[in-house]
Image 1 (cartoon, rainbow, N blue to C red):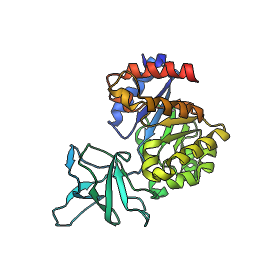
Image 2 (spheres, one colour):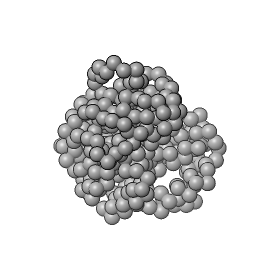
Image 3 (cartoon, rainbow, N blue to C red):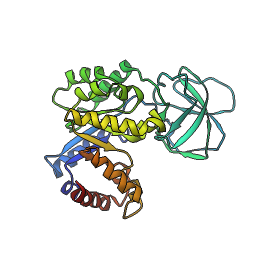
Image 4 (spheres, helix red, strand yellow):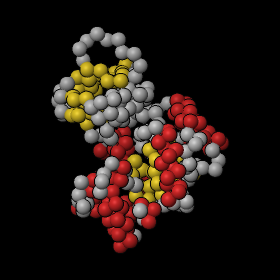
Length: 302
């Protein structure tokens, strides 16, 4: 049913098992032989390693740490899946789940940050942690990407989604190993925006993940970063994917909100070639209604 409306499918390597992705990629290929399958591989953004939901109260202190944490105090501790990036001295807050939950940054060590929750929240498993203005380790990023790609050789995919690309180096190193794949570079942090020109030149497709981008560059720089990435992408005649919460309300509604309609048209006006649906199709029973609505909208407003 889905392939009547799109030939572009995204698998999110951050979720489910590799065997799950093998089976799903085979199902997609069987239903739609000409499909472009994008395998979005997990980057080095740290995620919470909680197997169950964790309740956190407003003003509660929480330590988020990668590796051993031997402190004896009673502060709640949540393990992270990856090392923390290099933290800017000006940072006084951080967030979880694409900026949804904010914490005051009280102190940090090499691989541990202590924050004070600004609201009550229920922390679902495997939620990403964003520290604004941070710089990620390129060598570690390349190591993580290559290790994952070595493990997914049985997955049928055409395109590789690369998170938090900060410069051309990672792209060039992976392309040597995978010259026949399409490279989808996700520009999501301050350094990536700064180096947007070189990233676009060495990529096949650009994706703007608005969730991580907002959490990393902040409200002040968010809109102008989207405009700059879009303009640079189109100036080099690369396809542009606009991602994150395009029709979020349609997980529960038959029609989108007025603000979503305006945002969709703005993405089209910026030159977006593809609009990505995430939870709208990954977790909602209303996924076909959402796909049909978007298809009609784009036919009318292209």
